Image (tube, rainbow, N blue to C red; front, side, top):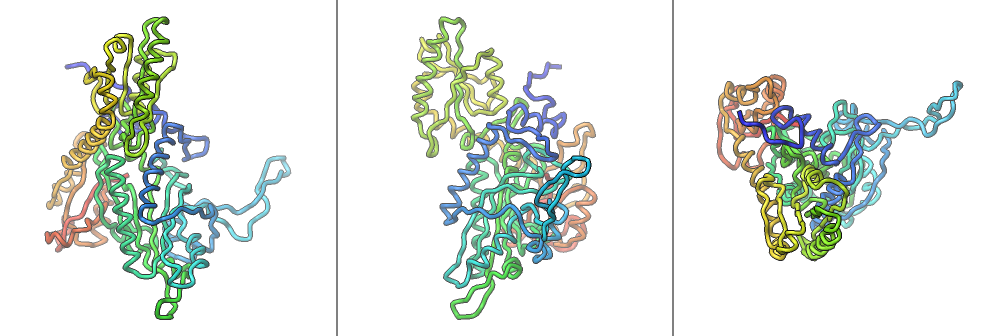
Length: 509
């Protein structure tokens, strides 16, 4: 048996996918667990990635007419109680503030004091507090639409946490809009769903499916919930973003009313939509390999790292000066509206160790430059989307002139690779036994690596949806938007009753 190639991450994906995921985050120095249960410290490399996600999305939001604002972290309990379905949906996840100060107890230890007249919920989501504000702002149809987004943190008291995917506190954006008509709100809901899809595929190199959630999977209090769903390398689905048509439910609860063009008093039509730091978890599980993270160039904190290779102290000053010169030239190159971010790694450590550290971080391109390269006018290039054996030499001037195109090629390679994996593990399944087999691990020692997306018929019955979940831990990820238009009736894979079309079944995070 051939000896396995050396990898930077142990265990590898096929051995223990959940632990591999945690080790990728650790090796890339993206985040670590904090002293507070379920919370994480996002380290500079991980936070720089989040900043690029934020900036990219923020630009797209503003292009569609939205502006940013900020609303309180604390929400009066009575606000949540106004929308029954909403409070029921979030009740078990709420962190509640009941006191406003600490004082020393009889034993000298600090104890809560100053009980609040009304408990305050630490923001799990902001529909109710924003609705109360909009109710003050909206008097006439002329005050509509309101198109506002906020970048904030959220607290949901999760029982089982995993960095980036599900934490007690996380960062996100939440858009909240109010409209004069149902049609306007509906168009807004689908417009923002398309923004998320475009961002995921164009920036993250992560192909997604779009569709509607079943009634059982809707956002609490929404009329319709739409989502983007991506397939991870272990064939599980990740809900990467949601857009909700709230109808008039929250407007009625918050009394967002306006005088219509006809002079009547009407309730506004509202939407909400959001993505979070969960996107980083999605990027890891879409692109990382057994050597660590692989950053899509459109979002990478840095694009190129230059490793000076100086064999002797006498060479060091010359090599460093040359590396600085190459870096300065590369920084004049524009890549999708921003200069290339280039790092010259001056750390006093072994060149091989330096290289591995950047491989684990997932930087798109590593350049090695030594005395021989300087003499020949070349650089030694390693693309993170390829193996280390695929390194190659190239004239320095040529590399600089083609660097932006090279990064685009890496971006496309990552997207195509993820798309191919999704295609390979997506099946049309019409037989229940085949459906069960598809979602049942063949190898008990590697239970993570099985399944995928089953495109199967569903009768729209809650009982069949429940059975699939209870028997196989499988859920309906989304109902494709074109389900009915495709004209593909069939029989429900669970009960055999008539179905208007296929839906997406998968195990999920």
